[in-house]
Image 1 (cartoon, one colour):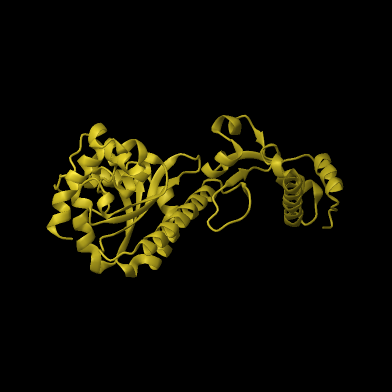
Image 2 (cartoon, rainbow, N blue to C red; image 1 turned 180 degrees about the vertical axis):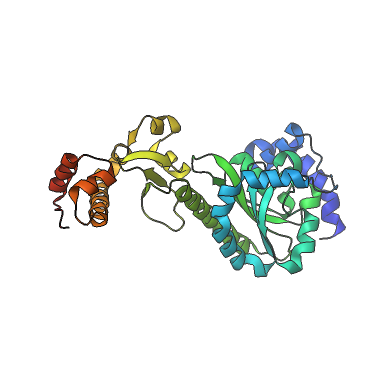
Length: 323
């Protein structure tokens, strides 16, 4: 990257905004937010803003459940892209990396760029960038080289996807960044797809960890890294839903708190849903009977229902205590 692009970049940003193109371009809308809303200067070349060690520890502690769920996905993603000069960052909702993966040989380079735990990559601080703009807009995106707002960042290519917690709230972002000048558009697209898959996998793992006693129901057709999930209790009431499931089924916290039967939100595929629910109930009862050695009274106590209720369920499901 020569001096020319660095010198020209601030003028390019300003000209684009003066032309009024921001209303037609998501990128230029972000540039406008960076300049008009956050008061940033595209020519800024100062060092990246970073948290103190105490602030970073607090941020990491607050993210601990999600970070724990993310470990496997971070390792797999870095295994896929690490040899190509990329690092992997997991951030909180404020755009601060709380965990990362990177090759030791690249550490000095990435630390100099601020691609490190504790750096602040919010749009309000760094202007248009993969992490900050992903969090500001709540969508997966790639900010490639001179699409960045700050001149000091135009050597980076960043592909980022948002991550939502078990209640569907924006909790952070997953990012793969590189400072290599030879990244092709095709390879950047592959990285973006891998990041999106890994983000969905993290959401799914975190959701399952948040509802360890619930039955997890997949909404819609199974797909790689699927994150449209419901958590259903032993009474077949929805106790949790991922963001993807909330959007697909129009579920919110109020509906869940009102004791929402799972079958009610799965009505569009009622026949399949009912069959799945019946089979799931049959499995629960079989396991209870197995644990009790076929003793109906003990199985009923384990399920928290009366002996008469369990007998009715056995008759309805075509089961006997000997099963």
